[in-house]
Length: 366
Image (cartoon, rainbow, N blue to C red):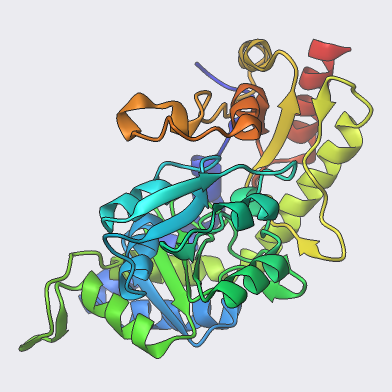
């Protein structure tokens, strides 16, 4: 159907920067720089600087950024990794693909890992903790770092949705042994396809991930083990370098749109708004997520009004029988699966479109 307000406006984004994108594409293709060339190196340097880590390694997905981070940290069979179920399946899949056991804990009212539950879940087999910085908000990392240090555990940050977000003045992706970011097109910083990047301050982790992304090759004539094919395309890296010039402004615009939603939707008893940025958190609003009554009805109503929303994971992740996670009891996660809905929130969204969304939501409840 034709929406009045799209959930993500890919076409509008492209048209706004079209001339610069096409010039960059022509430059890269004219140079013939396609795989692991200078644009990738430049992108890695810029991301490391942005996140304030020593290293960044560009990959073909956020999933591999997490998977390789775990493998490089030595996570394997017999190990347990604590994470959450209120997330995309990739957060758990990467643990399973390492031959390790995911241990799922519940989340709190901010949709993020409940630190009380983390401490209760630690066993002698626990090797790492994977906090998920969901919706552009960073977990309570001071507490988690203390837990991990006291128990000699690794932290691998799932920062897929949190590039640019901060906790106590530190960027997401700078706390743990390593972190994985997604560069999927809908992300705050997205490619025109799939992409990801790993950040770390550990030289050994960085070198191991570089080997894993390129078949274990240190050079074209020297193999140091078996790896994978997980290189970020050089062309995508060049486009991302263009986008990074506008990245601070995009975050600011997302925060402005969130402000419009906070103002316009406050005081409606059937709606619980997401937590606000404060002196501790600087949120980038990858998603603006409401908890609402009659969620499924609201979703259908907004669609009729021409507003595209996201009703992600209406079945709690651990309730998918094929995943073998049904033995976990996560009451809050299960409740959220019935209540959450994401509103359009991206830089190209106009104030008028945001106001239309607000009025459409209000007309359903008021």
